[in-house]
Amino acid sequence: MIRFESVSKTYADGTTAVDNLSLTAPTGQITVLVGPSGCGKTTSLRMVNRMITPTSGRITIDGTDTGSLDPAQLRRGIGYVIQQGGLFPHHTVERNIATVPLLLGWDKRRAYARARELLETVGLDAALASRYPAALSGGQQQRVGVARALAADPPVMLMDEPFSAVDPVVRDQLQDEFRRLQAQLGKTILFVTHDIDEAIKLGDQVAVLRVGGRLAQVAPPAELLATPIDDFVAGFVGRDRGYRALGFVAADLPVHSEATVEVGTPIVAADGWVLVVDPERRPLGWIDGARHPGPVTTELLTGGTLAPAGGSLRAALDASLSSPSGRGVVIDDEGRLAGTVTAEEVLRALAHERANAANAAASAIAAASPSGVTSPSAAAP
Image (cartoon, rainbow, N blue to C red):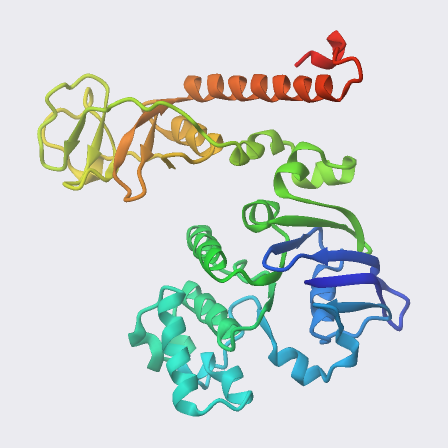
């Protein structure tokens, strides 16, 4: 657990970067600091490992005041990931990952074995171990940065906009990989980002900071989207927060069977959009059979997003809206076609979910009432 207790940072010129911050990052969870430029996100992060010294207040990790520890010793026990990986350009990937274990006195064989193990953990080929950072893509460098932070198995990790320097597609992949890793490892993570979508996707709780380093609101993502505390938080979260909140509503939707063809196969029913799959029934895209009769070629395919079976209403709705056919493609855990769903069906499911929530709330009020009677206004959805 990381705890900020009335922590402030004021510089010599009078600038206050963080103002009386009290915040708890629970053990085994991801706490995301988000806010506009100048709100003190990175300053708050760096005060945890004492790269910046607080002016007042204190920060504890599992009850130990970080101000009482030797800074070098403190930092070796905390994983730290920054933008673009922060790798040593003159060291190989293997040596970069082994840096902290070697500083902690591990023998070289053990440290390098740990490095190779972590390459696999973060989804990188072991053949990259002997390469230098300059030979890696941006996404690969970020994975190495995460591996290095994990090398000594620290209980706490600090991550300062680690995925902001890569393109959107790679960034999304890294976020998914990071969520998978955290599900396995259960680290206590303080994560800084300026991107509210990233904060919502990754955080177990999200702390929104105002300019001047004041805490505006801290809440789980679903609560933050549903009930922002004031106009500043509502504006920062964004006007489409209702749509994003669908990401926290499970989709219990029936799916419809969909006629499919494979690449190279002639379209039999050249009437509207036809879904193209590979031999394993993994969706490849849609083709307009009315405009392109004859054998299917990959050059003619039009895509859309894919919704996982049992995923969120947001994923199902986005798959439906992005599909050229209007039928959202739903896939199973192996990436194979499970069926399709329409936007109308998603909206009906949402209305049903809200009705159930309203009925549950009315029942709770009735149960709490001394007379067991609920007023009409309380029971109204």
